[in-house]
Length: 140
Length: 466
Image (tube, rainbow over all chains, first blue to last red; front, side):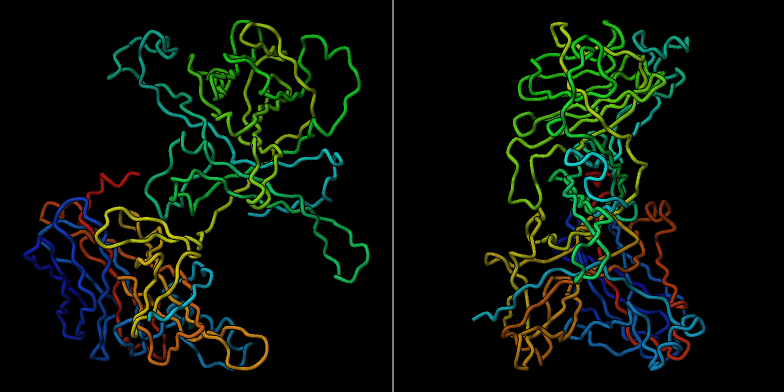
């Protein structure tokens, strides 16, 4: 499967990405528009795209490229989920990204046996650490 | 960082027993490009043209064994910057492994806390690898030596301690004879530079001397602990203690801390002369060899984040204690002093593509409704949006709630896009590949959502060196 992110130039000199998928397995929702000013030494830009799968048949290799006229570099991460999640941050984080898929295994001995562990999928993230508590206030 | 010794506190030398730690000082070698008459290497190669002369391996610098995690940074730190990195030892703390009800527990182990003391403008050293050595010495202020007529003579004892407070301005030299110095203590105004002669540290280095440490004497008292190791080898340890210890910084006392230790070659008998050529009086001391290097990796300090404020070119550091999470409608933002912050990990701020990405996750907690001792219950966790805000779930009640930031790390792929020339140069980076096979469960392999997080800029990579 090939995902392409063509960039289009904007009037103010920035450009934005949209996502297309050549095989029509995905419909891509642009959550945040990532714009990269077209001058040198521009600040780092952060953007997030959520792609919702429509079909059940999806290749196990995903290929992503960016088409832009202006040179840029990026690093791109992919988190994928079997659960249907909303495309903004109000949806809770999928802890399966870090701990693998939940196996519904009540027997701890069986759940930690080599046979079961071998079937566990690869973790997609790891936790670096947790900050101290930050108070939450309601803006009046 | 913690170090645990399998011995009682003050085990060897009673109350004079001191254990200090420092980043290992190592030689940094390089090829000399000098071909001039003054260079010793010119004797070996007849060709003195710098462009064509054979390059000779030589000692470039002394540096501390510390540098950023290479997964997270492209660049090491310079030898000069590394020499400002220190460790501060707090302790000893006696450890026992007996029940809390034991009346007289045996403190079988000793623990020291080793605090990183890094230059303030080096945030890239937050997650770094370092080599740590320990050394034990006898505090001269806590020990007494019998009168010894030998000490009154010029010969230095095998191990000695020198407080540099009493040294006059100028060059105090340590030399095997009265002409060639192997160690120079250069005091001028309020600063002290300690140099090792290149020939003593490494044989074929001509006359170049290398800096071991530099100090500002206004804030620190410096002492030298010097040992004869045998076979013409000597070790010099440089100790510093603060003039005004900051007692409010946890554990900082005015005890001497090891800054640097290195070994060099010279004759058996050394002479220590002040700038006028008069011998300098030293105090006899005792000290151990340093331990083997212990390799450590420091962790991310999650009390600090990088704040990116849109429209501002310069990013700033923000501490968690000054942040509050402000809820307006169903949007939560992090605020300090009335300003919104877009919070990122310092790793996400590195101006070059990396194979890891750090994302911030908000952990929301609400106070338990049950009676009794109040405590917070986990409610939900969310990835922060790229603009640093959070759309709250409908069920969230901000009254009494707290949140924490959890940093998660994921794999990232580097992508380069641009004109045809750029794509040809970076052909392996024009497409990012994600292998979903290994993260596919055997029972549920239907991926419903792919979430891409992109970090992009057109900043040139040549300008990324900090």
